[in-house]
Amino acid sequence: MKRKLEYRLNDPSQGYPAIYHFDDLEPLQIFCRRNCDFFILEGTVYETTSSFLKDSRFVIYVKKSDDEKPFRQAEAERRLGVEVRLYKEYAESPEIMFLPCFDHVEVFSYLDNTYLVLEGKEYERVSAEMDQDRLMYVLYVRETGERV
Image (tube, rainbow, N blue to C red; front, side, top):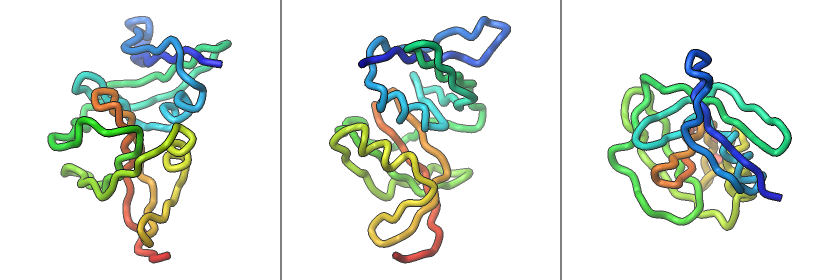
């Protein structure tokens, strides 16, 4: 059963205006998006503040991020998957790998973890984002120093 998803600006003075919506998403795609800390739309980075569910309508509330900027250099056209980037606080986070995914079950299996082992190294999740401009999930990680 497909469901509705809205992204709304968390601004009570403006009545929480909708900035983007979907009329028919599979629940797992909604869960992947709800698992993201950031949302990029038309070159603007939004930070997720909360989520809401009423009947079959999901809402993700966001606020504009003053600190974050979209990537200057990033692949624009890829199939469904997760772009993994090594988190850098005051610099562009370099991509370390792309994890192609068959479906949103696989995407969720990467996004919904505190720790991941990739190519024999353990990484800790820092945050995740949905880049709507590139239709890409991005996972920010830091190395733990553990080899597995």
